[in-house]
Length: 110
Image (cartoon, rainbow, N blue to C red):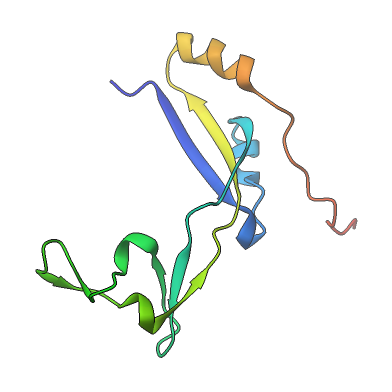
């Protein structure tokens, strides 16, 4: 049985997780973006690091995928981590782990 939902807001997309804040998720801090992604040099398409390979094949050489040499490696970005409890025990744990929500300091004031 699922007891907790975890979701991330990508700082590389300038996301703070406003929807999670508006729906009362618990903020637990920043998760480091150590995983790189790849952008194909010809198409500009972005790929997760699991979807490129040195040989151009994956899954025991049965599926084609972009070669690492045909792509540009892009550093991963940090993520804001949010959690949402689905039972009472998890609610107590989430409260203990909770930190103040991040705010957009560059927001325009109307």
